[in-house]
Structures are given as structure tokens and as C-alpha cells.
Image (cartoon, rainbow over all chains, first blue to last red; front, side, top):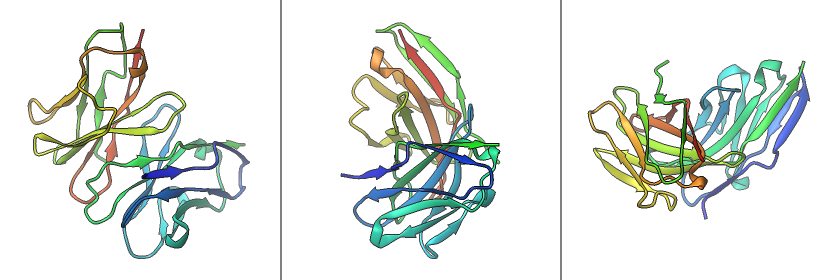
Length: 115
Length: 112
């Protein structure tokens, strides 16, 4: 079955700490991978996406993610978090090729950054 | 950046009542989606819509649900007879071609 797993439910960090949020997926065939962020009271916003090419993708606000096909993983990283990164982060996948397909989301990871 | 809008932001209804959730996708987008997120659970796909018809739907999207694009701008989700378990945040998304999906802010539906 197609699924996305985010193993960390809630991560608490101090400012300037490094961040890595895990994401593993189960999906047949080629994939497109996404990280969305939802700040408190706001809608889902795209942080970054992978369609093809360089498996290390850079997104907005200093975030990056690495697609490791052999591990079915797409972990999100940021070298130094800020208080304003407090939000919920969702990993999602859909089928590669033309990405008009529905997104399958993970359960989300809530990040709390202490000032 | 262009935005998807949704109304209302919060809808409270009695069990068994019909509700219509409204979305205005980004104007030149061609693919439209509804997702929902029950409190504390993951975002789940409901239905996708392209060329004035449903292109894909999930098991959640049963006969109680329907979608329409009545006037070329609005994209609506109707729940005919709401159940308690329909209480959730409902997100609309739109997409143009092989690009990312843009999400609206969501409508919180509370069924009493």
C-alpha cells in the first residue's frame, strides 16, 4: 500500500540547533516528493519538492532535503533553526511523470523551537 | 504568490444537515483537489477534478460527497447528510500541469 511515514511526532529544539526530520515512503514506481509546512493558523505551504535530477534539493528558508532512493527516504534538514520555524511539517508523495496525482501525506511532525 | 481561497473558515452544522464548502482555485489552474484532516490525524485525499469531471477519488469520498465547478471559478464540496465523523479541516488545492499543488487555508467543519 502507498504510504508515508514520519517517525517523529513532536520535536523540540533550541534556536541554532540543527534539524533533521525523517520521512520514509512506500510507493510503486517513480515518485515526486514534497515537504509542506503549516505555521500556526496558516495554510499548507510548499517548502521544497523533488521531481527528478539532483537528489539534494534546496527549498525556502534554508531548508533542504535529500532523496535516497535505496532507503525510500526524503529527510528534511536545516543546519540552524530559528524560533520562527515553529510549525508542523508534512512529507508527501505522489506518482512521478506528470504529477497531477493526489498527494499521500505523512502524519506530520510538530516542531517547537525554544528561543 | 497566487493564493487559493476557501470559505467559510469555520462551519458548524447539525448532524444530518447538508453543507457546501467553497473554494476559489488559482485562476489558470486546471486540476483541483479536496483533502481533509481529522484532528490529530494525517491529511487525507478525498477527490481530484479535471476537465469538469472527477478524475480520482478515495474510499472516503462516498455517495454523501459531491464536487462541482459550477461557474468556472468556484470549486465546491458538498456533504449531503453530515455525520459526526465528518468533523475535520477540509483543504482545497489547485494545480497547473506538472507542478506543485497550492493549498487553501482550509475550512474547519464541526458537526454537532
